[in-house]
Image (cartoon, rainbow, N blue to C red; front, top):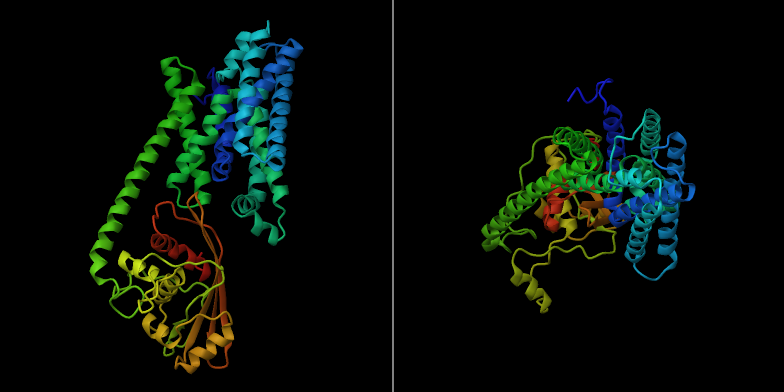
Length: 489
């Protein structure tokens, strides 16, 4: 492997240039997949290829005629890519038809135009055909410098605006409410995407660009514990796929680009299989637990029956203050400020059926707020605090309040004379990409004098790819949520 990166190796430029393009595409591909723009990832490289073929036909140049032809081709690639982007974005804003229609039309037109331009070009047929198949051997030292500069630019912009790009990708409305203009950051993302695709197609071909835009990102998002780690995993998978594919192609005398894409596809297939087996095992385990607990459903004082709380390892206190150990904390019911019905399905389907038929005397359904209240009790215990039992709190203060002072007074009247933790849930959204978008605020108060002792919040997205039910979502996401809220990050 060290031979490939040696300065004396004949194909060193091809390896370094292709690896740079693969890394660029793999990082930007995370945004494509999360924003469901995969079809754009196949249409834009083909439009870029049509631009290259078109300028070669118009100018009479061929890809092998030197640096001037290379610059002309790069100009055609950039022009066609950004023109296609403009076509798709304007069409999506003005048309009343699904966006996929425009993407499909663009791909069909670009494919036909590429083939026709190559067919009628008397000087560049062979070279252009090799370029479109993904041959890497034409990468020069100047191309390598351009790719390096592009990687540096994308890296700097990615670091500077990573939070804004993620925020506008996941929740454009929330970004607008906190003063971030989604259109501005969408334009930045599309500019990075268009420039990288144009540069990539010019050097490695549309097949390789599309393959590394999609496959490493798909594999990384199946196994990554969070969004930040997904970018790193995607880049690692792309690097391993390209270098490994080049090694195979070098030994077997095959086109390096398509072999690299094939290796990335194999990694994606293996990762998908492992993730599927893990999810099925998780589902089987959950089903077994539910069946075991089925006879106990409805027993006990709380909404979750008589199950013992899950044991967790001890943690440091984070930003929570020192308190009098003789005065326990009462975690009050959490206020639902989402304006959404966050009830949970019961483990006993007969209970849901009874409530649907109007049974007014059945046990109230458990909610997301109930699970968060129980998890807050467990997390405080992990940090060494004395906490009032869940059933005792719900008996004393059965309903949540959106006013912290009123909640403290209600707890004091009910005999809870220590400390109280009030909470408000403002956001609870589970995305199709396997993320929990949450905003949960807490305030710790002393019942004597209603003094505010501490405040914290959790608002970062949490990865929940392996969770199948809302209960599992909260079980998986509870640790990160309270780690952020209690200052353990």
